[in-house]
Length: 428
Image: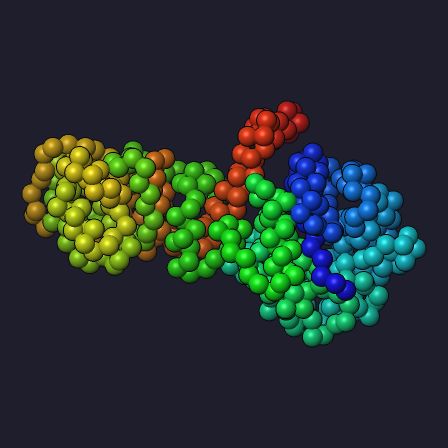
């Protein structure tokens, strides 16, 4: 089949889904999907609403059916769905029931391979059952860990002859690769539904599909390894706190240089109050792009000033965090170097050499280890444990993208309460 773009409307409010769907259709979207969150929230009224507003478009009901296949498929068909989804992990009997229901009601079945161990073998089986499409789907939680769907897609494309859909963080940079890898249905969620301009986002992805060329995007992509530095530079500490389940910032640590953004891996230092020897020695031990994080027990005298800051700039370090005192603030602000501290004071201590570099420290109840990622801005300083840094960076970008769309709707005349439908979702 000729490649089409399917917009996954993964909202929980039908009103927002319909608004974005309208923009996406203007941008050239052929298929519209009532996403699983939308169906769980609004029921099959989501499918009915899409069918009323877009009578000539293919409407997909992403049911993710695992049981009661006939009942769920018949209900979706009666609501107006052209295509409905059953999970490949469902029992064979359930998948067969879904396909039989589709035959009776004149619609089609897509079998979603999310969570299936042997996707090639299962794809062959469901093709033999009579499935109309097979879907290669990387779960959003896997996407946050940097997992891509394309390897599975290529292997399945070599094994089956029915059209294949692919989902899993597709954007204008990867849409062409999706087609090249064997997909006919390009399922796009966040890159459209979180875009401030969903019409333009759809147009860009369609253009990439048609030309086979990447169209660069700064958002709507997931990264791994050292690439997360660029993502963390874009998101705020508020975004990071939100996706870390409202984790707290380093207590009482504030920006010395307003507007400065700091991102880097920690090199930790523990020192005695006022002893600036180890913090200064750490400058020469740090790697380019590191952040020095010093625990001086939250009291003065100052252990940092202009000369240490200039040394950091020479070494191309990313910032300094001090649970203690800092001075020469005027000069540091003029230099624009990201500095964060608990205290500001004129008096400095003495270089006695007490303390250690590279040890685990604790600031206000938050542990910091060398290698953890440190992000600082005007809101404060967040610590991201190195073991989950890729996931948290990707989730923070996902959160920022979501908020960007909400802000656009507010700017167009709505309010946060209306966009969120707060009264509807209040706990009773």
